[in-house]
Image: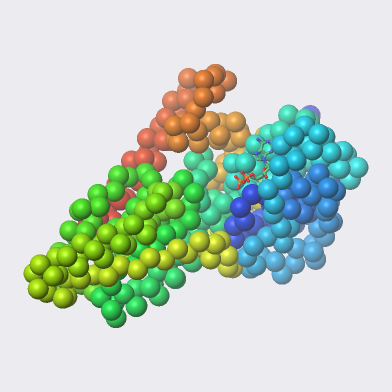
Length: 366
Ligand code: ADP
């Protein structure tokens, strides 16, 4: 039988993402409306170790849904990874009579959630990261806003590219995932994208730029994922040099496409969450409370084909590792053949979608 919950805690941990506040609000209001009190834990797991938290009344989360960043702040707490830090965290939770936790963050945050679950504290994870790198979920909280922010900035760069007949190489965040780069490349009308998931053909890209320049095109945008190391600045230099050489050889100044480099960096992490992120955060936050109250633990709330579903954290992490090719011996032992086949299918579909989407980007680039 499910235990009776009187008080739960909510925290945001790891990299911040727009929509985290909307998720905190949804967790708080979802719990309060079910007669459960809520504590907001400051600075991720650090607030648990250091006993730094605040009661989240309904008014405490009022007027927060549109705010970027996280009202609970975030931190990377190494002490929590040690058994002594973990025990301090558990003692804090006991002191405040907190019966369960909703942890909003990325894969590191979920590892912490599993550690708490294993020590008897029911914990549910919510994917809050701009990178969209939780393979089990089609979308993560913050991803849509990050893409919108990239798009707004790249649209500005297009204006100046068009004026000067230039190229701009824009590097965007995403850690090892090219989701932000690929989608914003399509939406901004970029001529190419450089992402970890698809092999980049530099010569073909430069040839395309030259062909389009000869046809009169003036603005050239290429979106590069930070997951592709040492690419952006080098590519800008290469395009500048190669097109200069050809323009000199053909005695045609117009063929020189000077390429500038721009790293949007943490700009992409900020700002008011989009409608899609606010709705996703709200649905996921309420679902996390429902799962806890139903007696479930060690799950991550995901969006799959438009539905809010849950997946075991261990499953989600094995899937991520399988996708990245970082599985270690024995990591799949606890999963059934059907589960492993399902993981493989998810990964195949994701890879196929990347390949097809990239192909489409090149087709519509001209
Ligand atoms: P993200 O959640 O965005 O992936 P991190 O990897 O920095 O960010 O993880 C956030 C926090 O989660 C860490 O600072 C730490 O407190 C906790 N954490 C990460 N990995 C573990 C682990 N293996 N065991 C316990 N806690 C962890």
